Length: 341
Image (tube, rainbow, N blue to C red):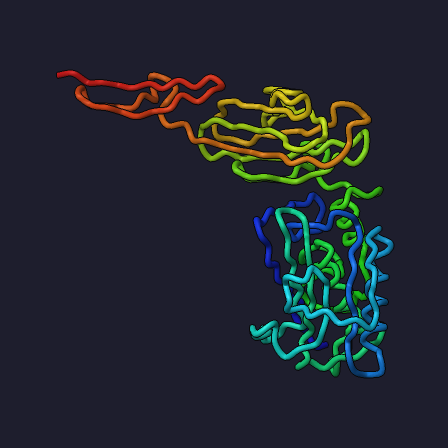
């Protein structure tokens, strides 16, 4: 079997990564709604490529995403400012060479976390055909590669841990699998999808300094995140957005350390701030009530503690010296030690 690599290229303004809880992986942006339009006019082979591409668009309908089509109208994939999704064959990607095993490139453009355009270029140097079943060595099936590239266009990245059309290497999978469908539903807050785990055991790892976009999809949905701190410092957690959220901070054993409803002062977002030692912590994002559902952004900020908080950890300073420090809120104190002879 001929192995060819599938590659998705992301060109993003103000890139914001949207992590995922399942095996599926998000590209970093999404469309305002679960639909977008492609302008499709691929020359050659009596329209076989156009038909196959349209079939590939329809393959994502079970996931709840709708690709609309404008037939027989060409939009240049290399024109990144026309806000039209285009597709074509070419020997290069808008002047840049394809990788040695790259079949196609999807370029995704966004403003913040909102996709504004997605363009697909297929490598015309490859041998292409349209067929079902086992992938043959003589030619690559255009339709299944198109399904994969359209997955990038709607917001999914490569996934190699479970069977998925979004695997980075083309194979015998021809259509979106369960993981692909679940990923789309989670990304767009559709029924049947959950973007993040709802317990400590299924918590999604985030960095101490990060912004994570999520969705409270139903009245019973909660999102739980795991944060690992390498040192002591001040951890601040808050949500942004119009969804009324409640936040709870847990220790590694599940003990509640802090909880907040409207600490940010706007009656909607929670704010938590606490001095924490090195270790593992969890934060749960919940809707204020069963009717409070919708998107939110979880903002995590961590500042390393500058000086020790006990006499045993006191910082040695000279008798004649000036030392700059910072008292972080949430119980921070700084200890210094002076030795006189």
